[in-house]
Image (cartoon, rainbow, N blue to C red; front, side, top):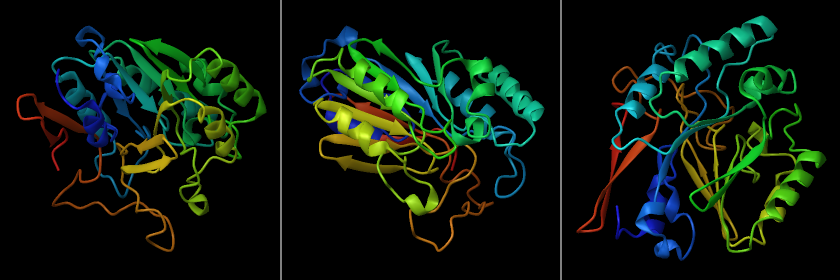
Length: 292
């Protein structure tokens, strides 16, 4: 993929599919070929969900795993941005679903897997079961010159990040130069996309304010079960599709409800998209990975 306009690539790649991460920064065309990489974002698998509108609820995650395993080359890592499992009031069932999810993703060829909770995983027990199975709910790491920050805006049942984690975020960002390439991974949108449907983070504006001094920031999130793209000043926000059912566009209907299953196009609106780049003509084409 050398020679491709990476910023143009990002415009179509940040969809919950293949993300060409070495092109996330403005002026990143100086990145050397050996530093180029991509990762796969998957979101909202809701393992344990049953019934309408997805009669193949137990099949879409295995299909996605098979599709990712078929990628060549394999991604550097895979990130699941929350709602790994579907909510349940039964603590034993919650742990059973997390164990099943853990075993399923153990079949991924790519061994570097990053996880974070969604409100279905964490809001009923402040993330305790998630931490038992998968570790910390917020963290940061570096990969080939890009600084990644995973934020937890779901363990608090009110949908806030919280003072303690926001202070941690500020301390983490203090280690990064203003021009550093930063990727934020989270479940809920940090900006108030549609608070009436819980499509917001209570104190998300404080996280955005902390990120604002940094020139090259991109946020990838889930939760809304559809593609969505937004900018707060220079910070770009990209939502991923769900692997269980799509949701309607923000405010497009009086009441939020899953989009009905279409037997003629059973996976429409689900999964992720692969981006194919043709080097010589600088063309980008979008290829559905799950058949639609």
